[in-house]
Image 1 (tube, rainbow, N blue to C red):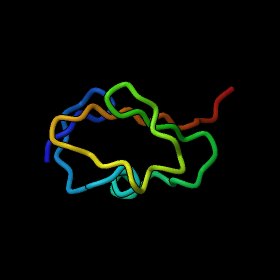
Image 2 (cartoon, rainbow, N blue to C red):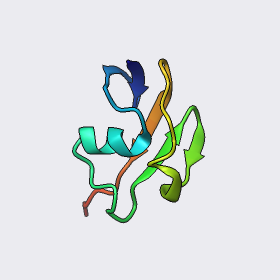
Image 3 (tube, rainbow, N blue to C red):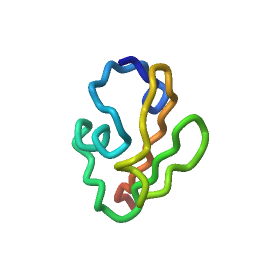
Image 4 (cartoon, one colour):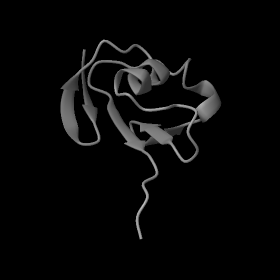
Length: 67
């Protein structure tokens, strides 16, 4: 299905937020990772049950190191 991920159109086989994170190589257990679907924050504990649909806009925010 086609979704918009961090502003870019992408094709994904992921059915849930959790499987999308896995597909993108993002450690879902890492501190600081946050996800919003269609501008609504998806609670970490619900990622495995948060179903994605065609056309959803998903934003994934993850921490980065810098100085």
